[in-house]
Amino acid sequence: MHTIKRTIRFYDSDPAGVLFFGNLFRYLHAAYEDFLIKNNLKKYFTSEKILLPVIHSEADFHKPLKPFDTVTINVRVSGVKESSYEINYEVYNNREELAAKGRTVHVVVDADFKKIKIPDDLRRLLELHLIQ
Image (cartoon, rainbow, N blue to C red; front, side):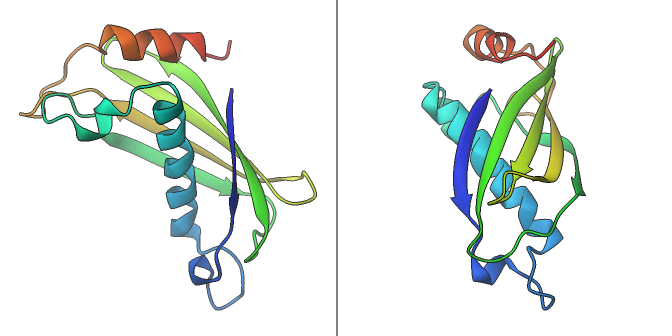
């Protein structure tokens, strides 16, 4: 499991004073980016030959997330296939209550957006963090 902390920003909230639903994905993606960067795989954000687009995303809210809350985001790999992988996220509020869950599915493609096998270094990382 990989964990980061982030502070909810005022500009990410909606008129009700809670995190705008679409902005949750910005926080989840930041956690995913941090996961790859901390594991020396930043090259996949700048590669023109191997791309890792999100092909599915979903989220559920359980508690409101308010501006200036510091949240904890846990990143877990929940599935690895030949050309795709799934990441699950848990977001905890200041009171350590589960506030949101998210899931993204990524596919590995070449520059022409044709599916390719997950590169060995990325596969090793994903399998190392795979939850059973």
